[in-house]
Every structure is written in C-alpha cells, then in structure tokens.
Image (cartoon, rainbow over all chains, first blue to last red; front, side, top):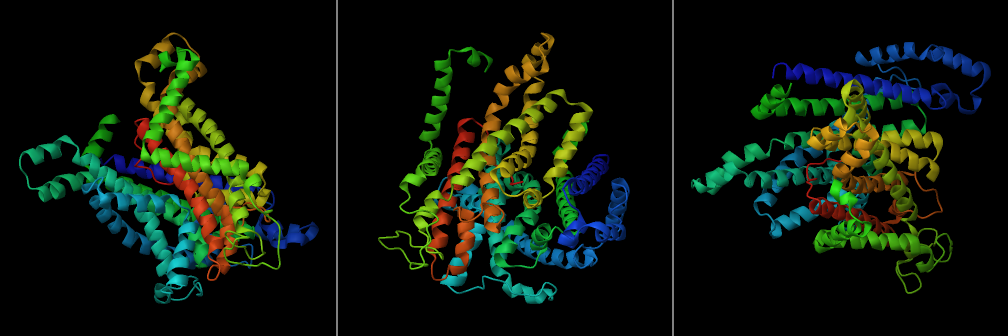
Length: 319
Length: 295
C-alpha cells in the first residue's frame, strides 16, 4: 500500500497537468483573445498591438503557458481582461460562496442519503422503499433548474416560507448568507441525496445477499447486530467513491442553481466570464474546478484504499 | 453471440422482439417506453395537433389562465401555452437523438480499439479522458457555443464530441472484460485483422453495455440541452423550447404558474421515461447500472 499512494498521487498530478494544457490549448485554438474581447470594436491596428504587448500576448504560446501554469501553482492567476483586477481576488470570494453552498448541501445530504438508503434497502420492495426510490429517481433525473423552479413556486410563492431570489453582495460576511441560502441548499441537497442514496441502497441489498451475512443469520446472530457489524461496514465502502463523484459533480451542477437563485458564486462568474469572453478568468475558473474534481476523487481513492484491506492487497497483487 | 449472428435474419430479429417484449413486461419499461413513444409522436405530429401557431402573438390575451379557447392559457406575449408545450421538445429531441448515436459510435470505437490494443497510447489516452472529465460539462459546452453559435450544426457535433468521451471509458472497460477470453486469442491466432476482431468478436459482447450507456447518455444530453436553453444558450426565440419557456415564464410564475408547470411536466416526463427505460433495459440485459454518478 505504501507504494500505491504515491503512484495514485502522481496520476492525479499528471491529470491536473493535462487539464491545464487542455484549457490553455482550447483557449488558444478559439478565435479571438483577451485583447479582442476587451477592446471589442476598437480591436485593430495600434490599439490591439499595444494591448497585446502589455498583456504579453505576442510571445510564443509555450512561453506564456509556462508562465501561466507556474503562476497558478503559486496562487497567482494573472489579471482579468475586464477591469484588470487580480483574478485570485475576484475568484477567491466567489469560490468561498460556492463552497458554502456545496458544503451545506454535502453536510445535510450525505448523512440523509446514508440513513434513507439503508432504510430503503432493509425494507426492500415495500411501501417505504418504493416511496424513497421513486422520489430519488425523480430528483436524480429531472434537471436542476426544473426542481429549483418548482421548489421556488411551492415554497416561496405558494407557501411564502422562504425567499426565492437571493439579493446579496458577493463579499458580504458569511453569516448574512445563511438565512438566504436555505432554498438553493435544499435543492442541491435533494439532488445529491438522490444520487448517493441509490448506491447505498443497492450496495446494502447486495451485501445482504452475500454468503457471510447468510451465515451470520443462520448462526442466530441478532438482526441488528448482523446489520451493524456485518452488513454496513462492507456495504458502505463503495459509497466513498460515489460521494466523491457527487461532490465533484456539485461544483459543476451548481452553475445552473446559482443562476436560478441569482447567487453570487463561482458558477455565475463562470457564465459571465464566458459570455464576456474574459478568457483569463474562464481559464482560472476551469483550472480551479478541475483541480478540485481531481483532488476530491484522489482523496476518495486513497481513503477507500486505507479503509478497505481487500482493495489494497488486490491491487498490490495485480501489479 | 457468434452463432446468433449466423442465424437467418428473421430469427435474429426475434431477439430484438424478445427484448422489447421483455421491456414491456416490466412496469418501469412499459411506462418508460410509453412516455418515450408519446414524446416522439408529439415531436413528429406536433404541428398537426397544436391548436394555434406557436409564434402567433396576441396582445389582447396576455398571461391568461386556462380557458376553453386556450386550454393551458397564454404566456406573456399572448402565445398559446398548449401549442408551445406540444412543440417545445422538437429541437431538443432532434438534436439529442442525432448526437447520441454519434457519441456512442466514436466513443465506443475508440474505447474498444484501445481496450484491445492497449499499450502506451492507451495509458496516455485514459489520462486525457480523465482530464476532459474533470472539467464541468457546462463550461466546455458554453465556450464552444459562445464562440461558434447555437445552430443545430454546432450543437450536434459539440454534444456528440463531449458526450462521447466518457463512452470511451465504458467501452474500454467492457472490452477488457472479453479481451482475455479464448475466442479473442483464437481470432488473433487465425490471423484476423484488428478491425475484423472488433467487428465480429468484441462488438457483439459489448453491445449490451453500450446500449444501456447510450440510453443514459441520451437523457443526460437532453438535460444539458434544456439547461443550456434555460440559461439562454440554446434554442433561439420565438421557437418554442421547454427550457426556454420555463426561463421566460419564471418571472410571471406567481400569478400565471401554468406557463412554468406545463413545460416542466413535458420535460420531466420525457427524461423520467428515458431513465425508466434505461433501468428496465439494464435489468433485461442482465447489467447493473446502479453505481453510476452523473459525470
């Protein structure tokens, strides 16, 4: 196992490196650059040349990539085309807001998914299971903007319990966010719970059918002891990776939710930067989201390896 | 499988009929297939069924509730909501049902080929696939759309490209399951070309997995398409589209909720129908797809 973890870390680093080249090459290949976007109709002749010289866009692409990537490693994400602000400042505050939304949803959603997933599995094919599973399929399949719109209609317009549109300055202290973000967190929680719950349910059902559980039952071990000591530790292992994938998805899926609720997070900034063609900002956001995605999946893989003795011996034998 | 493909065509067709009757015999498959057929029928026959012209603006009847003249009322421009809902899925269904097979084909072939051949190139390819998957779909789509526009000619290849990348992984994993088996070794020993091995030996064994994957891709593409429309990057007005209709009607939802509810129901029933069918398909083909996350 000692060999497995550095290997996995190296693979993660390679993936992040590849993402950064894909992002950079993608932006290079698209017509136009930061200067044509910034100057718009004035983008010609001397003005354009000056702008490019100022931003260093007339240097070779490889040189600019090295500068950009090494800057990103030290937290310097260069400046935005619009307003020439340091990107780390603009993005930092938005990232904080999005992480607030995502961590709120994760903190409620993961325990909820575990409880309801196990419950549905233990009452398989009965009314409880059918209700939970149907609701889960509903939230899993319907687009986020649909569930968000329906929930605004029900909770903020018909019942008038919660506010549907968030009006807040992006850099307000976190404490001011909390009463306003109940509804978006709720929507994200439901979608997230649905995904994890399905895995928990099928994993518990598979474990219940396995030989060692049958054996424990036949030996006369009390029901709850079988569930808690034998079924759950084995059933919940594959859930680690799905939780990671879902959290990573959350950072992309949050884009739509943020737009619906007018929430000043990273997703809205991403859409704005793409439509404004503020390429440096788009590049920075893409790199941040991709790094978080790789990091979360890496953490889950390593955690699963540490927790599950079978996995590490199996993989060690394969090598 | 190999034997099956040598059967006369009517007997091979009976396997398809067998699969369909298996699907219909499951509650989820029956409901799912019904919903899909209903929506396909409406997408094709919509223009003949719709009571009004979808773009006919009437300044006298803005945001009306349901009435005998307008069964679902009118929107903020006085257009008939029923007609627009009936027609609102056409472009989404057209684009996604063309892009899905394209994505499955290129992703499937690349995945099978490198799953069979393996080696250095395969390792590098998988890292590139991982790198692409770590970027959110909406960012990849928006960058292309903002640059090149939202016409069908742009959307179909873009969707097919990005949604084909995860298919590479699925096809490669399915190929790895069969590649070590004796009949592949035998085919190699007989001196068959790689393409022949892919077509005759591997394809029949990975087809089921790809079929289920394709059904899921279809629903995720629809989700992406309507989300893009909702954000204003899809179908251009005045053409009706569910995502766009929901986005337009949201501002008036407190006093004219039907404008939101009608497209919400239409879009949800189609996506749920596809998912139910994919579920039933996986069960009918003996595959488990419960451990998937939406990447």
